[in-house]
Image (tube, rainbow, N blue to C red):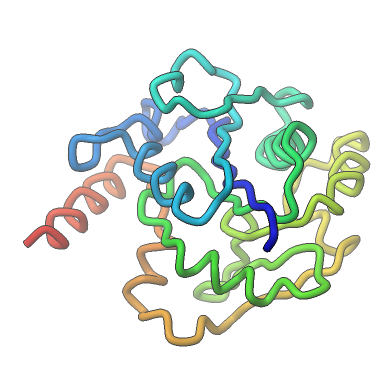
Length: 199
């Protein structure tokens, strides 16, 4: 069995939302708590990468700050891999309230000898919803040292399995899994989606 680590990247500025989107309430819990709870179901441990640790102490999870300051989500991924050893890392952004463990489990089934599995959903690469081995750490560090901050910049230097199909996972699960809320309208959409599930 692989040792796994769930990684929540919470280093964004939430500028389009106007407030910290990870803390917005969804069914009486902050969005990030829903994410953490789902990752806990498939991970041996879950960590939060944040430069505001005091905000997330209520989660009772390990909190780590970026080692490369102000260099975006790639720096957050580097931080997670540097501080916590695991065989595989399930990565998600803090604004994806409906992540589903079935999707991550499916990606893990296709890891094989690759360094990463990155899903493609609606013709868009989803590197912040992928899974990675620790073997990508030196590659990430090299890119950050060269001030190359784009997550997708590393894919040419690692072995990636790109996943277009998701087996028997229902379409509605995939749609919700890859949903992210960057602005107030998308937050309202998330609340409406949750209410519909309760009906």
